[in-house]
Length: 482
Image 1: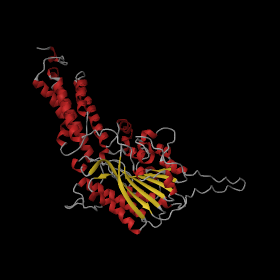
Image 2 (image 1 turned 30 degrees about the horizontal axis):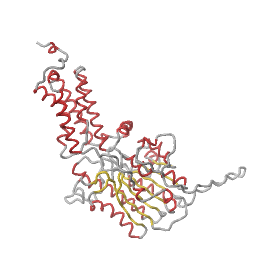
Image 3 (image 1 turned 30 degrees about the vertical axis):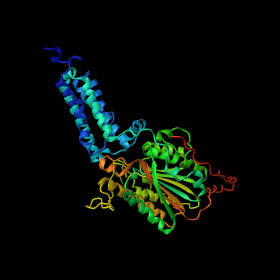
Image 4 (image 1 turned 180 degrees about the vertical axis):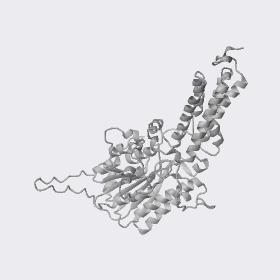
């Protein structure tokens, strides 16, 4: 009898066995990847190098006690799932690691899909670990080359079907650049500007589907107050990358603005030109440390979930969303509307970042597009429900535009990144690498820029404070090369 039969691992380097090789391929390649292989015809889950994680787990577990194989394989599954989510939401590796700090703000249990996915990943990882322990004596007789090639074949299949690599970074582009909305031009227009950054609004591939949103804004132009233009723009990165793109004229993300210095971005230029710069978002101020870097790029006042929830009575009593549950976008834009109308002699740049269409989403209570009927406006249920949610937002923005009390205001609506859909059939409804934008340009008479009011007079025993002088509008935001 060979000594290792009584305990311990068999020695490596024994002659290869076809049966042993097949067993190891089943335990380390087939089982950990079976969920994704079966789903591949219907769903997109880009994994690139994930199949190799389980081979590395087996290599480490071979030199550990049998019980240690289970946590090691669970770690491999954790890395696998994290990579899937990272690539789905366009997060660079560094950003994805930093994002782990914000997991406490996310209610993962709110999504039955996410819960099922996590449980399935745990089950396959534990099964792979159990099979590895069972076939541990076969490891020395298995062909490592054959096992590695099997894992590489899964990677090749994933790459060929899901096309995760987009090549070189695209040339810099943005809706702000396409519309030549420099700080000088905005300041000289004599109008306010409302900028709405829409979560997950990609570029529709079908013009008829795009018109479901465009027509809402087109109706606003019938009164002769606005001109509607629209287009598409390239993007890079996730939601904070969209802020870098549109507000700072560069590819980047939130980590680029975490220093203790100010940044030469559009809000700062407009603030220096005498405009009030305000931002609104219906989620926590701590997410991506927006409360820290928003002032760094020039926002004078930022309002988040914590601020609005503390108001009595609350202007945003409802809660919307799924995993990212926060304030409702339609109520947030109403708060922005009130800010635009307050102190009408003061020009304003108001930035609204939406939330409720983050995947996974909660369908709207009002099914205007008949998504649940036999004749929906869009034949894919997911795309239809998302478009229905976007239409709620567009209707709220249209109502703001038509408000007779609204001072002259230009409105720009821009998608932050492509719609991160899991369904392969749903993805076909959007153009890869692009986001849509819509601009409502006010045709109302321009007004000269009015600086903030001078400080109130001090009591008689103190001298009157000197009047503040405001710098004239600066040059356009400097934009770095991509």
